Image: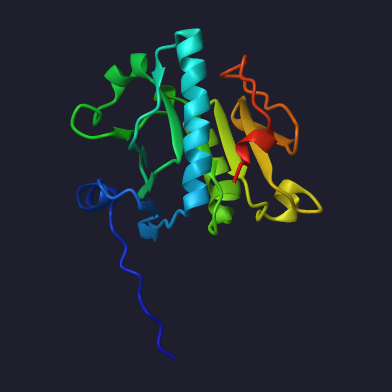
Amino acid sequence: MVQSLIKLITVNEFITQYGDHDNYELIDGELMEMEPTGPHEQVSSLIGRKLNVEIDHQDLPYFIPHRCLIKLLGTDTAFRPDVIVLDQTQLINEPLWQKEPVITSGKSIKLIAEVVSTNWQNDYARKVEDYALLGIPEYWIVDYLGIGGREYIGKPKQPTITICTLVGDEYQKRLFQNNDQLVSSIFPNLKLTAKQVFIV
């Protein structure tokens, strides 16, 4: 039996070699290729558009970058969220930001939304832990296909948005399906249902 060895790379090597390539992220030194579909991009874009409207309405010092990496300090992990809301008042404390779109502190991040695809285990487990450790106040898991495990989205499986709100150092999770109105602590005036997000 022949086993192929996975060549691990450092987070700095990843940023240098793949920082400009939107379809890769790094988890524990392992290069992960992301292959988003058209519907995946539609959902991401709709979420970004709705949140940008709220940012404008509330005149908040936030913005949604087109491209951004989150470098987890002390690890060889760099996530590339589908949607990330940054607080521009905190960017002065980001050591890499002036040269490249890389965030290292959870204080710079107000909200992350990950649109679930075939690697759903990372979104529901790994990223929940890492984003909580970073102190990111709100994390959305947008499962527009309803492919996550039953322990995460219930039974019968159906399209679900899980909004994780940081309380202390752990996320409190709330599921939204069908015509449920989303409840966001970052955007309390948001008028959006789960069904409106699942337009595809």
